[in-house]
Amino acid sequence: MTRIPGLRARSPVAGLHRRTLRPLGVFAQSVATTAPAGAMASTPLLVIAVAGRGAPWSFAVAAVLVGLVAACIAVFARRMAAAGGLYSFTAKGLGAGGAYACAVAMVVGYGLLVAAAFSGVSWYGGALVARLLPGVGAVGAGVALVVVLAVTVAVCAVRGVRLAGRVMLVIEAASIGLILVVLVALAVTTAPTGVPAGVPAGTGVGAVGVGSVAVGVLPALAAFIGFDSAATLGVEARRPYASVPRAIGATAAVTAVLYLVATLVLLAAPGAAASGVTSPPTGDLSWASVLMDAGIVASFGACALAALNTLVRVLFSLAREGLAPAALGRTHRRHLTPAVAVGVTVPVLAAVVVVGTLAGITPEAVFGGLLSVGTLAFLAAYLLVCVAAPRFLARIGELTRGVVVTAVLASVALAATAVVVVLHAGTGLVVTLAALVVVGAGGWLLLRRLRGPALRAMGVYDETTTADVLAVRAR
Image (cartoon, rainbow, N blue to C red; front, side, top):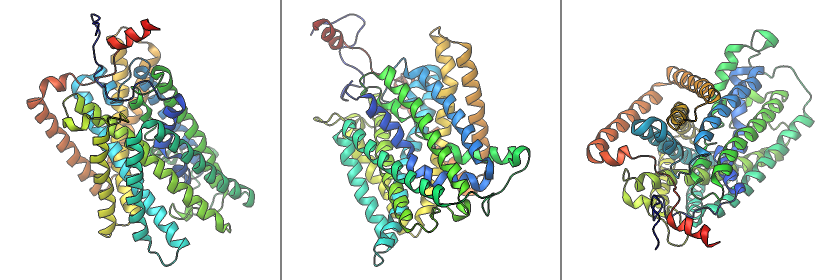
């Protein structure tokens, strides 16, 4: 083969299906990871419980913060295509230390998000099956659904991101439609009321307390986690420098609108906040509860697939860099997907949920615990990439004042949010976080000793190869 000076003969991430995924598939990846249908049905209730009438403002503040983070991510996504997503981006601004910390945060965050989606299906799906088939136990049905879902998402993930994108898009569209039908029915059949029973009215201007709004931002942010997942499809996207940043920004905007609509409708429904996330407010609409739960289950299923797609690509990238077992960097011969990583991660994550449930831990407790730790991991990853953005642009001579302001605002807000969460966390969460920090630090020291050069070279991305240039010339 003809060699061209300065170009690689083979991309560092060769093995993936390069430049084939359409923009809609990239968008579907980020949307599905946020599980908007499930979040619409549950998160607004949590925010209303603490923020009262200020809940829409809590979501608005969270949406602005997510928009700032999306702008920082776009700084990198417009300039490089990487299977490692945020950690590969962070490497270009913060070096090996920041990249390693971000990689650990992403593996923990997306791994727990997959497991949380499994537990969400067990929780809502088991309860739904038990209601429809009274002779079937909710726990047994939930465990069976997790096993079926684990096999299904593994097959879809191995078959390819194009198939997965179609599946996720159809599922999320149908799920959101079901939830919107229920919400519209609530709005039409429920007369406007004052503050629903059990909802704090707040104090201050407009009966909305600034403090309660601030507290409500924490759970509101959890509804957006994973909106960045399209960043790991840069290698496979047809036009990565355009479709990836657009997908991330559009996901943040679309989900923000959906959450605001859901919150406004639930505030207008009496007893909405008091009903709790396990029993969405359906009034006298007996069919609404079934539709609501069906939509949530489907949304969690799509979330599991999307989060798995991201997780295995992060592991694939780490393996190609020599920082994870080499087997995780192998791809399927036909489908060109990280099949080994799929086969390793899915059984482990499904087992976490199944074992926890069979041990007597309620599905909602498993779901809440996994999501709490996972959310903090995402906050850490977002903080690191925001700090890295201006440093990266300064290094290449393209720094602007707008990026500096955006990065500073986002970094301060994310750091403050993480501190507030940790200060108000229970003992179990604090111990878990401390254990993860210790394990992560131990891994850093070990890799620094055994794989120092590979650690310093973190952040591989897809590069133009000799074959790419020759192909263009041939046209």
